[in-house]
Image 1 (cartoon, rainbow, N blue to C red):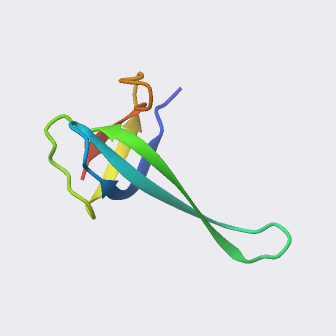
Image 2: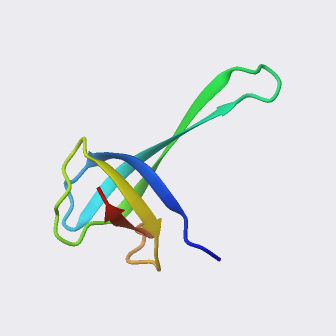
Length: 76
């Protein structure tokens, strides 16, 4: 099974080797036909602390790194 790749914006880089990425998805409501925006935050592993708040990054699934980290940064 292929690993999922998501794109989002860095919202926090306060922790060592960890960034918080906000991923937003848009879809059309099945009944109302209105475009809905839903977002979710993921904690991702950033080995070199290279990314700062506001950067656009792509993250990929990985084996669990800690209690909350299941993603790692693929590229900017």
